Length: 139
Image (tube, rainbow, N blue to C red; front, side, top):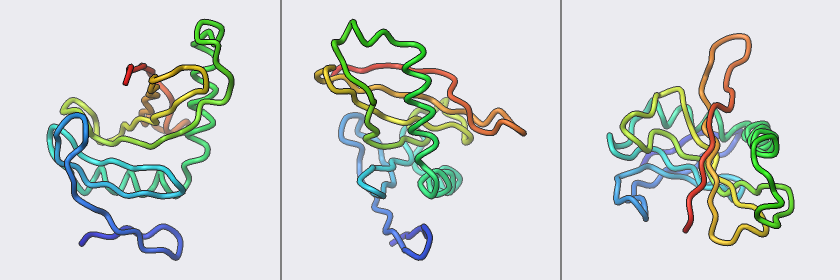
């Protein structure tokens, strides 16, 4: 079994098919969030290492995703209330995904069955990861 190290903890990484898409992924849970790695091109160690780095300091990405969505989405249309709540992170789910991109998956109270995604991309120094796109799926 593969494990990753987060602080002093060893977190087991399971290999399982993604529920909706049927892809093979590696996954782990950290702080009540799911981290899914892999997809159309399969799981890989580069994306798993990015997932480990993001999991070790995930709060700034959740905050940035909230700020990004708040600037782009009119909450009145959904009768929703802030904040968006992180459900998990996805790394390399689609074949065209770069090894330097990932998505934060969020929900918001008032948007029944809505799942929001904010894509982050490493835009290089000094900025690092930056939100570059968002989407919404109805589940």
